Image (tube, rainbow, N blue to C red):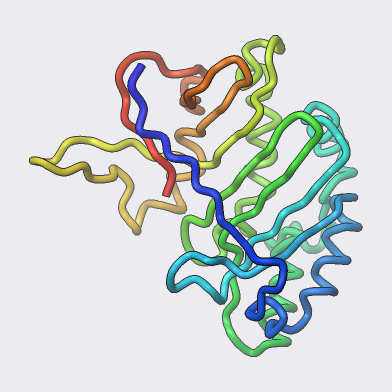
Length: 221
């Protein structure tokens, strides 16, 4: 199998001036810690032209199967029914407050869940894409748990959401997804998985519910 799956790690400094300039981060941190019973770190993105966006890291002392159980029971990162009816996730409620306080648009560039046995990384695909899609992504994760874990035999160390296919275009590679299709298609086509026994990433096809074999070039945005 041939892959061009690229791990992207956003680096931070412990004294990030930009994150101190955004008002309301302490309240956001406290709220997320309560909603997801996790220790939360929030920093500014170091990605070029995205410094006003946030990278949120949630450290949760549970395993993947435990988190998914709580998701299905509605006891982890849950939302009030009135907010669900309005299409608002827990995260989108908090981010709306951040925008109102700062009177400017602030988005989530990356959201990570660091669990006891798995690190889940969700990347931004468009404005407010993470906050609006988070509940659906977590539900999809629960629905695909058996297949993601090789029929419960092996839990992936890392799950990257999403990755994209690349195809040859002359002497260059072009992404299949274009900006007008990113949010609609991106999160629910391909995910990247790392397993402890393998040095390279494998690709999980959500539509077919299997790990792809054969030559395929994929990378995350």
